[in-house]
Length: 68
Ligand SMILES: [Zn+2]
Image 1 (tube, rainbow, N blue to C red):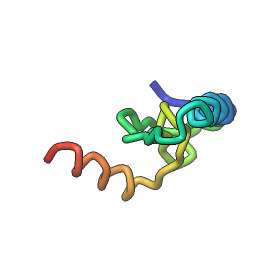
Image 2 (tube, rainbow, N blue to C red):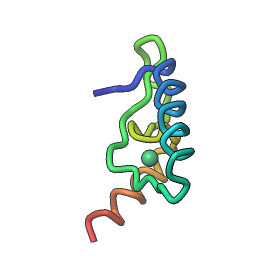
Image 3 (cartoon, rainbow, N blue to C red):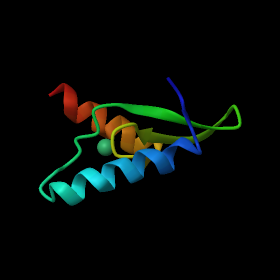
């Protein structure tokens, strides 16, 4: 499911709140989705859990590490 550009703020805010309650919390970025802006892909990818943005190369790296 693609993430809309505006949705990122919500995700980040939710994650920051969680982190305040638990500073040890780390996101392993389990779900990275393509970011969309008014229906067009921005070329970036977002972690739907923490809202961190990745470039395609970074996303590929993450997925590579996960398979090990
Ligand atoms: Zn994440």
